[in-house]
Image (cartoon, rainbow, N blue to C red; front, side, top):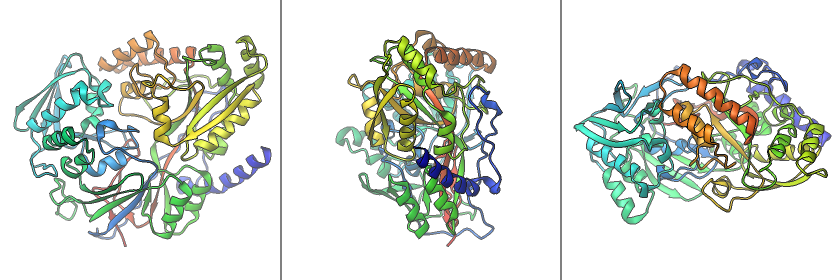
Length: 547
């Protein structure tokens, strides 16, 4: 174990020298027991830029870590799936890397004083792929489908307080709420903010073909040409796109985009370096980061959000139905070692699932690695000889490396962990809150944070109907506060409630927060104009190839 760790640390030292912005040194993460705010955040870096004139044409080829459903109501990863969805579907608003809301399909909006209506002015002249125009009536049709319980949209819990949608005039829309929704505008940058043509919805109802939305129902810069399930997605330029380029002609600049599904980062890196790829969506393995950083003509982009790694524990089954066992698990992991080995020393540690630069962050003590304390707690829980548990993870990125290190650390603390790896979609389905046959044990999860607003961020992880609530933790006080946060526009009031929610979480420990590592992408130097939003999802509407 020590020899393996030494080798990994040597590779990380080399990689860190190249990935750091400007070649500078990185401030290490906070020590156990120290406030997380002492750690200096890793600053996001810029995508490649040039003074050369924009070149039209060409096909950009990028990789995607896993599959993405082309029906946006059935997303697998709320943020990660936007990388492919963003080719075909525009949202009502965008949120940039600075967390600033930008008008898009919605040009403006007004929230009533009581928060029960939002009037939205739509952009004129937008066409769906099927040639019909986007109007208030078509958006209403789409939203009526979203709100239909039979649609079973994954985002329905986030929009369930929308009672109805009215077309006020040709381009004016009104959302009517049963209660205020303080984060609704920000939420419109996600899948619920996509607008699909009525004809594509009708055809989907008749055929069940989810590709119809990307072929005929979207308003995005590209249209679907071919979807080879689990292998690749090919998209072509939308000649009727509604956004103009810097050259005065309609975007996109590219003729097309090809997305190759490549789950192995090392394979993706080799393809980028050889010129077969122009981009990689996510790069996390230290050896791969080092390889790309050392290669001519390639660079690593550090994105604005972070990946927060944490362990869900199934609280409905033994042994994690016992709070003493959950507490023991918190003492059984060495977060500093995880940071150095897996996150290249560039992670920060936080007490809960928020980041220091979020307005509702609450500082607190980080539990340190204490195997003796963990064994003591296990003995109190009736496990004097330790306990056997399973740890499930998706076989992508650094997930296996993280789990293997946790396995070794926790063994010293009395946890004998069996690792169970499977593809990301399968592990999510198996551990979904709605699956009554979910296994006992733990699941390693990596969530992209921040999300658009505090309600969405907290509901996505621990909502009473959230697919991702793998711990099956439904605390009455927490859920009531979460509902109040959703309707509260006053930040001071919301902060008080969110602070209490963190306290409840730390008291009951439904998850073990590990480290918040950087979210990285990789680009060839000739790949220009890629737009990265607040979720590190890239959009290619203004991308071009300088070659």
